[in-house]
Image (cartoon, rainbow, N blue to C red):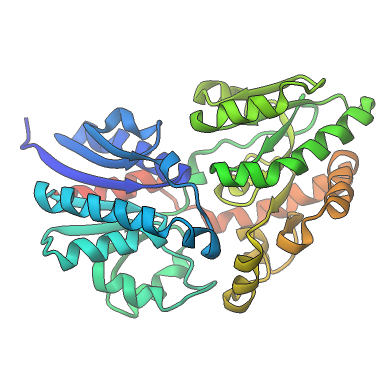
Length: 370
């Protein structure tokens, strides 16, 4: 048996938890590891000790985070004490740069001497480019999802590895002649509560159009399942709400269309070749500040890379009852438009894939640090 190595992993949202799970699934077979840190329900099977769950991180957006700042400072200080005391052989932070950078900076300041790796680069090409320099000051290596991102960090002598996007492993389906429409209202409680009114509008439109004949599928997380089931309990269309990963994978094969909260889920739906409508709404002040800082026109990466609206998206001020109603009706009624969306998406998926699994590339690099 190889010598036991202690690693600390911090991921505060579902996409990061998925990465941690798939990464540890490989690492645990190759190394004798003791894993502690912050994760969700999926990755926790590999953790010896979990200090916080992703459900403890409910805020997203500049203005929203302000209201939780003292809570997050308290969590960072607590994790700092744990990390310094336990002197882990390696720290791995995943995504969530506005939490993981202050954490890494704090432990460096308190003389943590071992290596710190960050997976998923912050979108410095879209906004706040100075983060590249700041990351170079605290991290020993960064794993990027897109090859073009490397230059922003190597500029400051930060070691960088392109691993490709986690959608690598997601299968592609033929969306036609399926039975479900998927509603993906987000992975944070705040997102669900803010966006669910639009899913209720969608439900009412489906109810009024009996000939559409689609059931509703809502994949979610354990801490959100009760909230969503409560909101949908009186719906008269068959609605499947589940956080069971096997049921989620099974039901995705039956999905024809999707209304998707902006984020990683939009790429996963695109990779599955499912036509979708993307929605999102930040706090009013976050939207105003974001307009001054953000350098891109779109929310979804496929739209950003193509510099055109391939996947329809309604965000912030553009997301209202009138616009949503019109776009949703097009989604459920315009088959030609949906086919064009899927065909165009497939021209850009190459930007998200490496010729090797991102988890295999990551695990090979991490093993060298252990």
